[in-house]
Image (cartoon, rainbow, N blue to C red):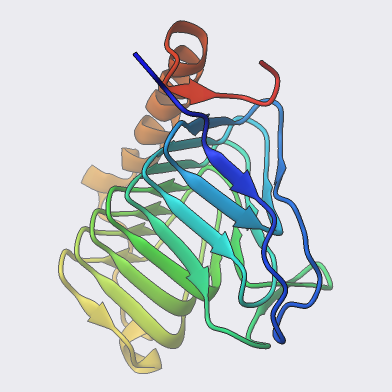
Length: 208
């Protein structure tokens, strides 16, 4: 079986991003063989980036993917070209995932964007320009956009669109049945990523 390594490469210079930067990937992170990571993207410890994902920091500010996050399959991560950003600790970012986040298959996470710790992003969710708090559950097929701010522990139902701030302010708390959903997935994908790295040629860590 012929297996390539993931494509991890610097961004090309353009007017909006003149500096050329390589991704900074922890030796404890695991990346699937056919994912592509381009530009100034920091990937923290124990992240698992699965298969056929495209993370492209070539049009605006850098990205940060916090520890124990899982980016599953066919996920698109990009940012609007130019100067739009979120500011964390005095630094400007195009996309910032705080950590222990789950981003499920076919989700699109498009900056400027902040996703707080222990927040779940479901399949086919479309997130474009938002601040999403900690401990949230954004269910499958939901849309969050138009620079809304979602507080901590909020629930967006399957297929729901949140594009007005008044709608974001009225979101319900995460139901009890979903409170442990994200941590279960975080734990599973942490173990799954390590197993792919140790037992198959299908995913790699820089520590190999």
